[in-house]
Image 1 (spheres, rainbow, N blue to C red):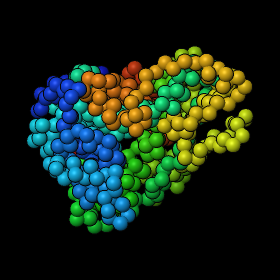
Image 2 (image 1 turned 90 degrees about the vertical axis):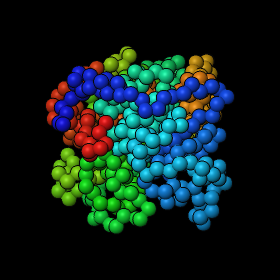
Image 3 (image 1 turned 30 degrees about the vertical axis):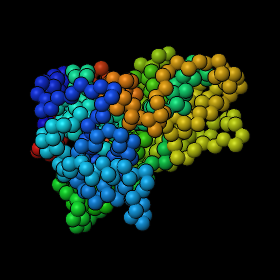
Image 4 (image 1 turned 60 degrees about the horizontal axis):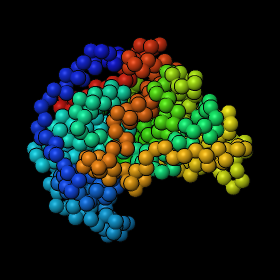
Length: 465
């Protein structure tokens, strides 16, 4: 189905899907209970997440390549890393599945699901789990498309007892929460512009699609493709880490690190959704697009580097422009930067106010104040946000505590969807090839009708949202 906007009909259809009966119900979990967790995507980042949750019951693992899962637990010599030993034992006890759809339909003892797959699977897996009454933790970006985020948000609102969490762990960090307090407290006055940068991509990008090679025996490539409609053969430039740079599978550097770097400006300044977005970038990866701003006809990899300009026209106090830089691009060094302080090329955020500036690194860490009087004003601003037990490293256990009724989720879908949608609108503007104007209430692009197609996507049969 060709979708031209996130229309009222689309949202009514999403609401109707909420009526799907749960195949398994979320049991009442007390503070003394251990939560029964399944993981979809048990290697890589999934292993990192799950290593924090070995105090719970890990009852099932769904993955398309268990050799890759095993490699995620060992060192260069093949020995189990000490910090992964408990997870390896838990995985050995858990029931294994290649297809998470089968796991969610068959296994009845699951309370909660952690999803750490490539981006094209996130929404499909999360929706299936939530329809079955299961709590969900979804790695960032929450979804591959804008519509998917709105569908999950509607589902979460319809089932308020389900605990949801996006995996932007910096949201739980102490430094980032202090940044929000300082900006809201007026430490640098009225903020007029924000700059955010990252060294990503650190994977192949801006290149033509490689020729396929034989699939490793341990990998189910058809299941790895999942909802993606492309018939691409296997290549290590896609799996298991490099998929972020390829249009059918990931949402590039902005989708990867925007969840960490754009989080704090949107939160601190209550920016809401952008009203205009424009992207300027290097060439798309492909053979037929040497001078074209749009993706090649044979869609391939995202551009290697670029800048994206977000205008937030509904921000309190007037429009604020946020500029995003990736591929190693950065804004100029701000005047007055304290001696010995450098802009971290790995990533950071700079807020420009009328009474000074504030800069921090990725995840909101190591905030630095710039300008006369800023330190004194900061000292007078009291804490106002709660702190998450364990800080950034406690993000996964915060989800568990919320399931047990002991805490509130740090980054529930109700909060995370606005951040997620903002990031994805940057990718929409990139694919549109020109500046877009966005009506967040209607969920549609108002100046380029054709660009609304990028708010949604097609799905392979058997994987429809």
